[in-house]
Length: 242
Image (cartoon, rainbow, N blue to C red):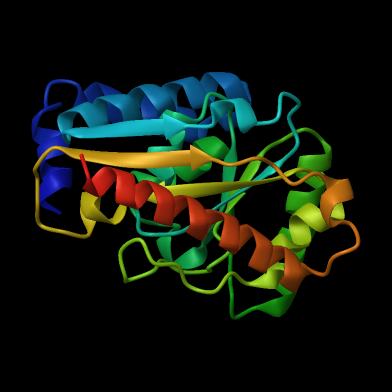
């Protein structure tokens, strides 16, 4: 919470204008292209990160597919994760978020600008419809981000189990799966520190459809989780030795 307050205070002159503009874009999403809405989100995000004394250390941008129509699968540490990936990622994407965070101010407007989908984990029918909608949109050339853990880990850089069902969207769309390893994102909003912070974002080599077409969703989940865990383990050691 302290860092959020710092972000606002250090951008106090911009906040009213930025907030009005974000709300307008969120209320008129069809008036702007994905690229235009994403450019605004990235600008606001960049100002917030500078104000919050957060640096995003990006790796593996070359692994992002050149052709749109893919799904990111990062580990999940907290509310800041999406903001870290937005600064790191040069191409527009939307998210599949749980309904519990759908109406949090600022995130609500960001999700609206992304044309994100909120999923109700207690409603199987609604969840299945979201899977079908995302698969359809990905086939149409949109990119998505899904947290396969389902909820954020409360153990720093340690991962929870990845749920196989989270990969059904990609499997139905027959699209590339791009793992993302996030390191130290939880320190942004889930601690009381406002010290300068570096959050690492690693885009890993994508799994093409031919790589996973003969696997079930549980096996895919294990592979993606292992790739992310290995990246975190290797780079967490490097970070500690600086």
